[in-house]
Figure (tube, rainbow, N blue to C red):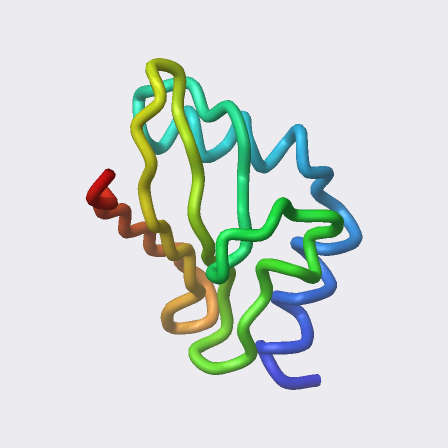
Length: 90
């Protein structure tokens, strides 16, 4: 089975949105309040954040204090997760 499918199965079946907020909070060192799609819509399911190539997840988020960020989390080399976050202009 391709890594992209394993990635999707892992994140959409095994992780809840609350767990994702906690994971993103730990990665950022700031409490994540809300997670949005890349288009800025509220996330309903983990599948809303998935992108097939490169295999990973991403969107926008807001943290305590009101700042907003774009984020990406992708699988590299089939075994390591990379994380990138960038502040969005208000």
